[in-house]
Image 1 (tube, rainbow, N blue to C red):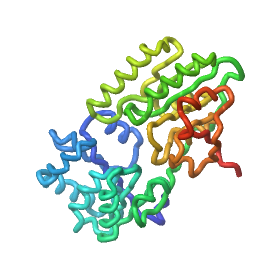
Image 2 (cartoon, rainbow, N blue to C red):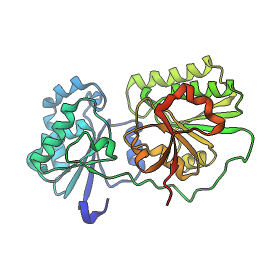
Image 3 (tube, rainbow, N blue to C red):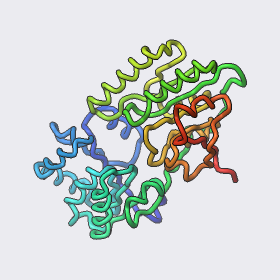
Image 4 (spheres, one colour):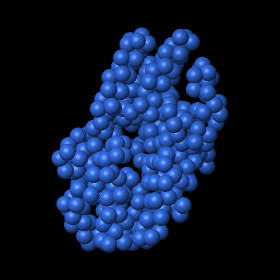
Length: 314
C-alpha cells in the first residue's frame, strides 16, 4: 500500500503483553505501536465474545490508545475487537481509521456494524480478498504483497521420496489433524513420502495448547513414526528453505482461508499446492480441479472442496 494513497500508516496492535504473537510482531520490525492488554484482560484477544461486555471497564486503557494515535494521519486497526475499541475513540479517529478486515465473520451483524461505522465516521475498510470483502459493503480489496526472503532455489530431490508440508500455526481450523489423516492414507496407498508440520501455537489460548498436544497424540495413534517431522516455528528464511524442499504443500484447512499466505509462498517456491476451494489465494492463482497423479488417493479423503493451484500464467 503506497504512502501516496494511504498517507502515514501507523498500525495499532492490541495484543497480550508477552507471548508468541507479541514477539512475532516485534520481530518484523514494523513501524507499529504495540499496545498490550492490561493484566487480566488477555482473554479479550480471543474468541470469548462475552468479554466484550467488559470493555467499559477499560476506559484508562482507551485513554492510552487515544494518546498513542495522536498526530497519526492514518491508524490501522486489525481485528474486530481492535475495531470496537477504536470506535469508542471515534471523536479522535474520525476519518483516520482504516479497518483491516482479514477474516470471515460468521455473524452478519458484526460485518454490517463495521461497514456502517466506516460510513458514519468516514473510515476506510480494506479486505484481503474479494471473498472477505463480499461481507463488508463498500470494502476495498487489497491483496497481501507476498515476498520471499531471497530468490527461490529448487532443492527438491528429482525422484524417490516426496516431501509434503503443512504450514500454519496450531488451531483446530488449520487442519493439522486432517493433514495427518492424509499422510496415513498416502502411506497406505504405497506412496513413498515424508511429512512435515511447520508452525507452533501463536495465540495464548489454552484450547490451542491442547490441540497441539492432540495432534502429536494423533501422529502416534496413526503410526506415522519417522515419516513425520515436527519442525516447530521457523523464521522466514527457514520457511523458504523448507518450501524449496517440498514437493506438495497440503494446506488442508477446515474452511476457506481469507487469503492464504502459505499457499502463495509455496507457489513462489515452486511447490505444487492443494488448498480449500474458495480461499482468497484462489483469486490470484490458477485453479485446477485435479490433483497430482501420485496424490490422487487424497481425493476420497478431501473431496471436491479442495483444488490444486498454479501460479497465474502471464
